[in-house]
Length: 258
Image (cartoon, rainbow, N blue to C red; front, side, top):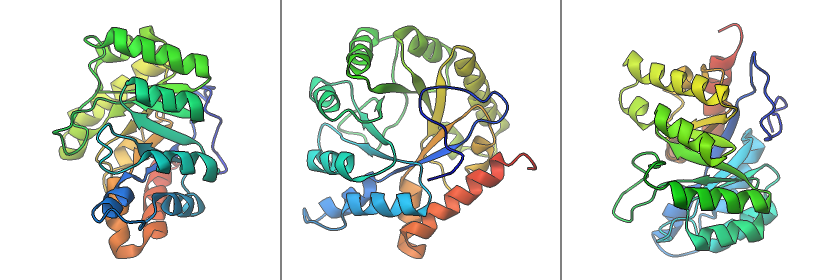
């Protein structure tokens, strides 16, 4: 684990917050599910990621169970030594699981069966009642809540009004247009707004070792969720090295001397 990691309760170092790397292991399970077998095992992958420098593990249990399975979540909760971030839709069956297992964090995400991957942030305004009930249930269970949203002021203020502990900013637009200054500026302004409201700020989607630098350099962000690029890179260099490459790029960008 990164020796500079803070706890996940939202206590801020206003000057230079530590930056955590949570590795999303969904696509290890995608490969396994291609043959409905036992290998590769996402739990084994998670343990390797921890040893390689990951500060936490993220897994998205989708309604259609296209990759991660319920058993994977149970085994992750019992096996890993870093925090578990369970990504899921705000559905009763998912919240029931969270109440039973009590992972350190649940990130509520939008979900459509026809999408290949999550294509945007939650519509906080349209789904305010559903999300309010979900956040309330997680609070009663003692589970930290995060909302996956676009870097939009309305969504950020909505997340604050719902009582969420954190927001995860969707970096998809940036990842598709990393050379456009406006995409980084939007994420920086969203981070500042979230922090001013007392929200912890995370970010993720489409980040790689090559493009993570400008996002990691936004000092208000305390956690990055990165998965697909790490698993894809692992085909060529191995999983541990793929994690280390991202870790190095993040730390270099966050270095005070950079």
